[in-house]
Length: 96
Image (tube, rainbow, N blue to C red; front, side):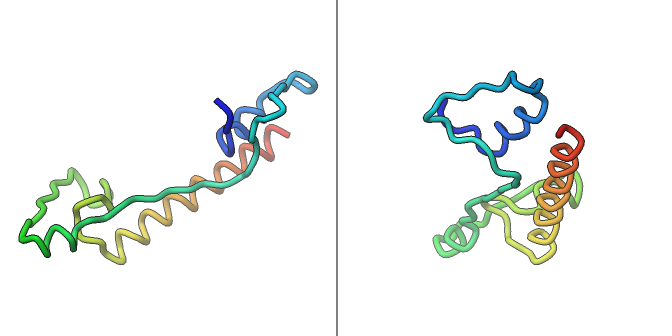
């Protein structure tokens, strides 16, 4: 209810000129994309637990909470973040 960050910025791009209002305490605006995950794969293995991860394609959930982290998985997630960031910037340019 107080922070809109990049999502608020994206929505604000579509406001009619002079029609965007925000509370004085609101935090708005950054053109960015952010993603994070927690991975406990090694911790589980240290406890003798072997996680099983089933996917419907190699690009489905390339990095997750219990699966093994691979360089390919990290590269795929970073590529997705980068593509989303490019799309976000295009949206802002088009809407301004």
